[in-house]
Length: 327
Image 1 (cartoon, rainbow, N blue to C red):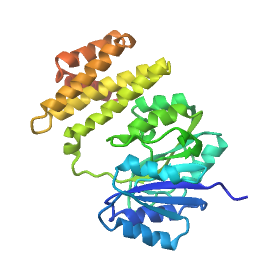
Image 2: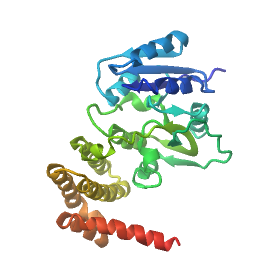
Image 3: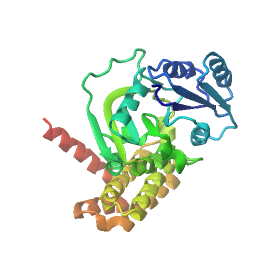
Image 4: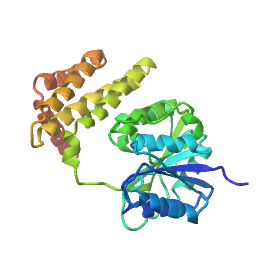
């Protein structure tokens, strides 16, 4: 019996140096019944040509050429035409292990889950062998959403690209167009709406870290989208009466916004407007949710509002304390 069709959506823009490696890793999957949707998001380099050449060689590949609309718009364009019963997203400068799709599919089916999640690692030139005894965690969607606010799981949980999703989740779910940090606007809803989510510790996704422009990204006003996504999630949990997740989301936001403020302060240049916006969001979330916080947590949040840079000393103190206690 043939396994069900899985659609893999690859948004593509200015990645000509990495695109072939990405597509080859998808074509080399042990799971063969794939629909590979390459979405050329108006890329001005040789990416459109590369996509067309691959489509001529493999009938599983479909190419969409569209006007540039950003990562979310490209993913949505792929979702709109996907025929698979399941959907996965791969960023076009990354690549995946030959067993990634097969592993995620088997996990999803054997656990009757709506989403399966693997681990990831910065990529190397060679493919790592599979861990013979990975850790497997099966959680409700709401418990999976809590992992967004647990530091050891946050990145694995928030990104869209290390997962396999049931197609039915996208009946009323899309990526928010025109936003930085687009995964953060998407993942909390997807996880919360899932009945069950299964995680594996297997590192099956290899991602590319661009080290250039990191400082610029920190001070880019569009980075406020990351805070806005967290605020949107807080409001979502309130509306759905999820008090346990709400408290975790509020604490995570207050900590993240304070750290972001301190990081911006350490960058060269005048960033007063950005700092003011960060502080304003911090104050709004604190004032609206202070009843959820313990006395010590309120003290920290209020300290940041009146003496922002003092928060940096709290961070350093906590780090030194943890280091001392683990000796």
